[in-house]
Length: 290
Image (cartoon, rainbow, N blue to C red):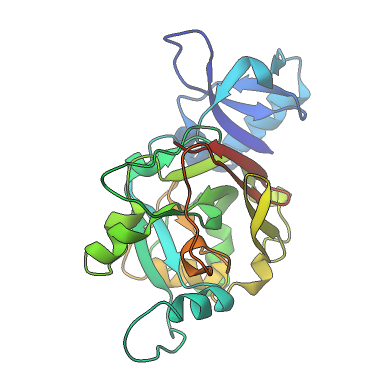
């Protein structure tokens, strides 16, 4: 099932939760928000199936504005750094100091909630704050069941579904603030997400998904989730160690090679660009830049 948050184009309309009936239509669901649906677990999914199979009115997708599936997360988005070997290696060429080895444990950072934006919304360049805005396609994991100290063998039981994320990054802000990632990754509007959550039962091969970034139609990143260094069960197990994961928490699982700052010469997003972020079987983001 593909679950989304949307708003009618009529001014002043409140966000609604829906499910895609087919490629061009959705049905409205009776939930307050996406997190409420996720918290309901199997009971919620049974209600969604009933709505999709019944006589609920089909709403044309083109008649609504699609938001991020969780427009305002309760927590920061959890992110994994250096999780594709080729991306680690291209980044190593840019780093100063001793040669770094591949990490023995996942590297975590986060993006603040106001970084989250919709699948078709404008990505702000924040002129005067950054001049080096970069792209990073990532598979997003949505937690469905709460847990702390989750065992790797049990981790996938805690996954509700998947979404597409671009970990848009202000590279100069990263460097300006001691090379730490939080500030450079957390500018408002720098986490486009969506266009929906695909429930885990519809993504049997999360370890074999084609991931692509295009800028103005030109492919910049082209890889597959099979190249993740730390797989999703390991990520969940390590992240949840002494840290409770809750329904609606979002984990962005890292990006492959092809980011702009590691290119020769470096490339960054500019006003008028169109950033496309796509994961096969999950969805496509199409964000204007400026």
